[in-house]
Length: 261
Image 1 (cartoon, one colour):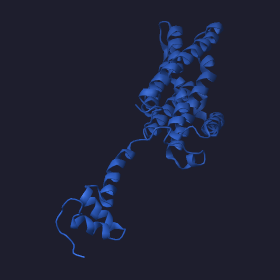
Image 2 (cartoon, helix red, strand yellow):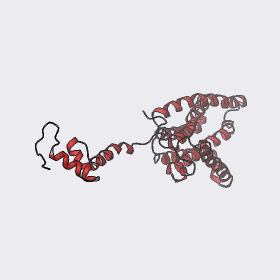
Image 3 (tube, helix red, strand yellow):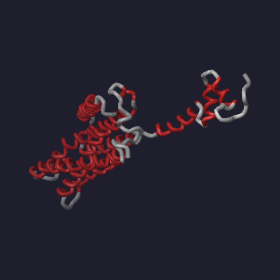
Image 4 (cartoon, one colour):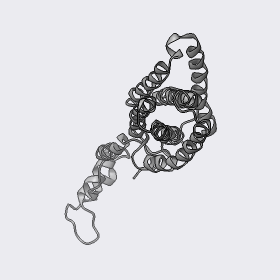
């Protein structure tokens, strides 16, 4: 039969018949792509790679849903545990010794007892603030800010009793300020969700809380063994030093929010 090279009526162009006669494979795909102006497999691969550039962005909690065993391979887990332990130790020491230290100058036992009530009210209200900020700013920078403010609050609480005018009021205000700052412990709960996801959340929370609990016991034993912790200046300055160390560790955290905006 004679093959017509002209494209008339119902006849098919020679170029199209050549494409239909090629065996299935990359050559057929390339030939059809030229006729229909479709991207070839190579061009689609390049397109897929370019569209995956968004994967470099920090994933949200839904995309980062790891198990509790996978959490051990993440550096953020150990950093969060260290920072949380340092702040937990400071909060425990402050609540343990604030009354004894205040009684060195303030002889009103009722006033010192009511301070803990005021501190608990401030803590409850400030947790709302910390949670609201964590949704919008992220945990990392809030934790760093809290450690800086915590250092200043502890030092202010220590030096407030040296004031010649109204040491009671200054002691109360500085104590409430430290309670506001240490209420940032809420950030460690929210950061668990944003860093590691919601799967096995109870186990993850228990693991992170176990570290600070052990750290408080160890630090309590050290306070009995080391002479430095037998003075008020040593106790308060060690708390300030722990806050500084917590801030340094927090700088190495990756910043994540609970909700991507």
